[in-house]
Length: 86
Image 1 (tube, rainbow, N blue to C red):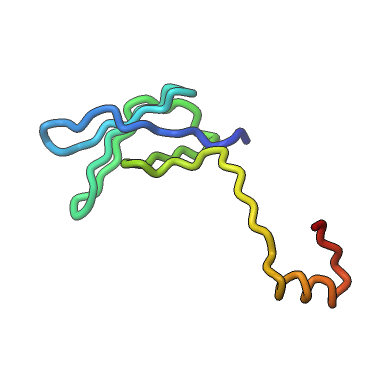
Image 2: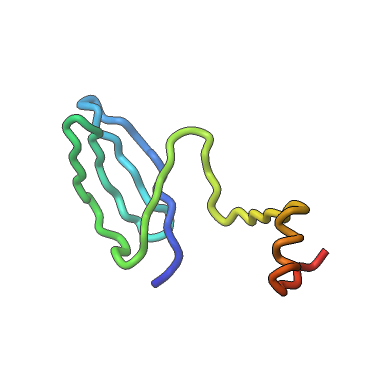
C-alpha cells in the first residue's frame, strides 16, 4: 500500500457540492456536507491508498516534527535505563 494522496478542492457547484481531485491518481469525488452528507465518486483512481484533503491553510504532508524531552522526562528516561542523546 502506498502513501496517502492529497485531494485538492477544485470547485464548488451551484448546488453546494464540492468537487475534489487527486493529482497523483486522478481520483475525483463530489462531496456534500451535513446535514445532507453525500459522496459521489466520479473517477475511482487508486482505491488502495488513503486520500485526504483540507480546506484552508492547514497542510502538513511530509512534515518532520520532533519534540525534545524536558528535564523531568530526561530524568525519568535516565532512571529507567533509557539513553537519550543530548
